[in-house]
Image (cartoon, rainbow, N blue to C red):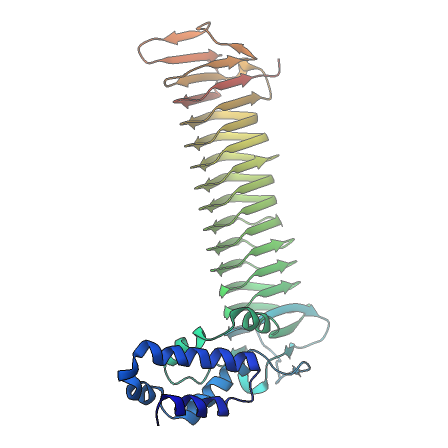
Length: 422
């Protein structure tokens, strides 16, 4: 059998597929032969193996992206005494919500029964989505290249699993993993919640747990009106939103997305993003750290006893806040501050200007200015060494030198504006 005969036979055997899928598949294998060269035609045919088995694999792979419009499985095996839910999926999304029944039920949409496995043992409900039947990783990757990715992804989003948990039941653990799939959790009580996906979103509402750990490589994270002792969320390329929570600690990290938190009370809140902005609204935390490599850090209507705010290539904006023992830094952007700044505050703006608006009188502060400053303004008047000035150290000190509230400002190039409310 030569190349032409092989491809003709393959096309006949996959004729049950959609025309677009047949065309994409045949174009791929045409290129596969061409890349190998005419001299290696026999080797390629030998590598691809039995043409009937190859056709079955192609059809099976496409089958996983769609089923009939009414494909749906309802209910399950006996779930009495289930305390753990373990989900190991390939390309299905999951919704877990509260119900008023006395046992856990589930419903499956657009997933055939042969593609999924459900079992209960040792108080654990396990739902697994089976992988494709490709005999080698190389064949899987080669076929994957022939996919129409847009239509395939759209079909994948239809594949859903709905799990209904009795509203009075507190689960010990939920462990979710999906290659491509999102997770929605609503009105569920669980002690330990772990979720991971390579491509998908997490959305949690009115969830009660002790430990919350979310990790998505390419998706958004949203947690609202929920309870947890510890919250950890990571997104390599998506936004993170946390609203209305009182955890002991929060640790949020996004590689290339924004981070937004609002109405948070905690002992420790750590927020970071590589290339996005950070916005903190109405938060009360003992320790607050916000770091953005290339975006703006904005803190409003918040209070912290210890803070560290850094924007490498962006600006830092703090408004109407009560901050103690804070370190504020921007390498290239401006710094704009308004509120109370208690005990020790360190402000560094390498290239941008600094605007400091104090909520009370300048007499309540000892402000020390360091560096090669261009111009300093106090209440709109330019400072011309009217206060204590050390020529050798290029340092200016204004305010009350005996105050316990010390603010140190360092600026290499930018203008400094200082205002009080008197």
